[in-house]
Every structure is written in structure tokens, then in C-alpha cells.
Image (cartoon, rainbow, N blue to C red; front, side, top):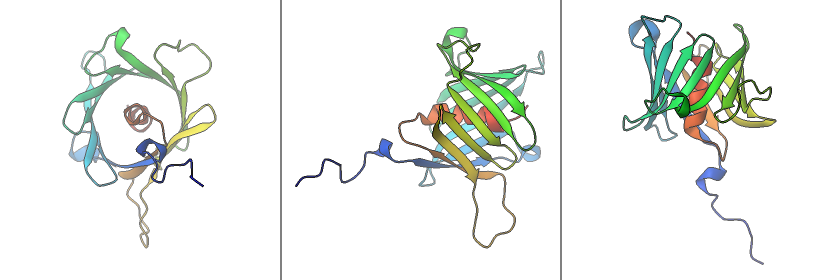
Length: 188
């Protein structure tokens, strides 16, 4: 009797893990470096800093391993907007993220994908967690899309908050998930 299931699942049918390292701010420019499960560079987020004309405006750029710009994130007032590549026109907006609550122990951010009105009461995604502990769960309706958590090592009592793991569940866009995580972990 033949089985209808494949022997080896397709790559998009299994969760994908990334290791994320956050640089120490006082010593270098703020950025995140993302490595795949083999330890190879996958993505990099570099902080462009705040604008001198508008101190409430902040620009971050998400690059792939070859250095090509994938997404530019801009924070103005209390919301983030993600644009395709280096663009910053309204037609190139991919997502808008708005912070609902932000405390030391729990943050909640609603993400609205482009093509949807941000005044719509139902977000496309919701990010919930604790930025200090590097824990975040991204949900779409009632389904978990991705999660982050600290990298723990056995027999170690003090854990670095600069290194954490991202698990992206099947059939989800890794770049979109990373853009959402930047809005969660990078504070103004």
C-alpha cells in the first residue's frame, strides 16, 4: 500500500530557525545580525539613526546576506512603516505597526499589511511578549506564525540578552517576520 505522504517534507513544511545577535549599543552602531541554522549570515539590520530635522523619526534598513536592501523601516511618532527596498513613498508601504501597550514586562504591537486600512479594528498580525527577555510571539488570528526566545546554554546561570533564537513556522515570509520583529525589539 503506497503512502500519500512524502518521505522527506518540503522545506516550507518544517519550522526554520535563525540565530539573532544584537550588537552592544555603546560600542558600535545599533544593528541586528541574523544567521541561519548552519551559522551563515542570512540578514542584517542596520540603524540609520534619527533625523536631525525630526528627532522622533528613525530609519532602519534590512539587508540580505549579499548586502542588497530588502526593506527600509521608518519610525515616525508612535508607528513604524516598512517600505520595499530603499523606497519611502506611500505606494511602497508593506506594513504599518502600531504599539498598543509598552511596558518593561509586556509589549503588544498590532501590524497592518498594506492594502488594508490601519483604522480597521482587526490587525493582520499581533506581536506579544517581553522585549527585555527577548521573548515574542507573532500571531495571525489564532495561529502562531513565529516565536523568539533567548539562547540558553546548559550549566550557565547568566544568559546574554544579545543572542536569541527566532523560529518561523511553515508557509510564512521570513523577511516580513524579521521586519515585524525589528519594530518589537528596537526601541527609539
